[in-house]
Length: 373
Image (tube, rainbow, N blue to C red):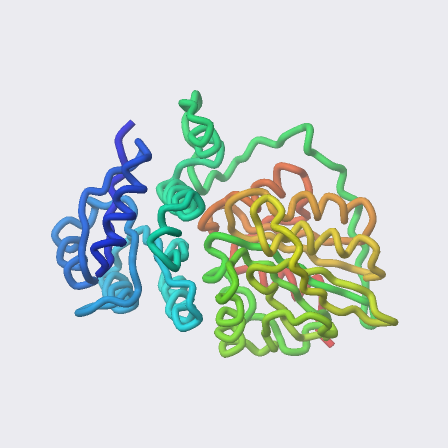
């Protein structure tokens, strides 16, 4: 197997060494070059734009920072796979969101100290993100973690004809259309590629959308408020980070708080958000399955479930449970428009999707089902 070439761009010699050491533990990758700032990296890339399979990019650097670097790469229309290695500090959140808007594949948060950088969590996050960005399938990644050699060829990231798993297949109940005055909710899940995808969905929703909308985007604490604020700037609907005890209102989009779990709870004749510190499920906090499961005993006449780009299966279990008890309409993002066709693929293979649509059609499909006031 040919190793994937990795370029590290970071002004810290220590961080370049830490990342190089982490990458050297995985036989699938090789650090073929390093750069201490964006300008140095820009020069290397323009000399040989096809050399690097994945780039690890710092944000704050002299001469040319991460944002300036990505803007120049976009200006040249170079197709590069970039992972942002970002500080978790709040002041770094806006820059990280901007880099995702500019086309960065995903981001990994830097540890707060050198000792934390040596811990397994950071190493696993870097290697998992690299594997996904380099196009290794999730089954290969699981095999790698088990130290087994994959026995089947890897599937392309944007595979368009997934095999339906018979054991997971469910019978979809017919969706019952509901009209004005009915209690409706939109619940959306996304992960890798989600922040950029959401910019193709949320700003296209009308301010008089006849339902509240809840979004679970896999992100750590400190980033979801910035994401919500950015989407709010671009949108007709009001977008905010979910707050504990907040009343759900139509025409408002609530983004689950990073590092917490989010549930919906009935309070009188209304519904409120509950933000909890409960543990991660499947290493996810927030987790879409937890949100969907909290809706099982709700009185909503119609729940529109949406699953966009992302690695893994989050959302499938919760939607499967909802399918048995509630009137739901399920929208999945089709393969070719996904950054990672993992979560939508799981939904499709389980037979849960009413429709699989390109990203640019997701908003219109939501509006068509939910309606406006």
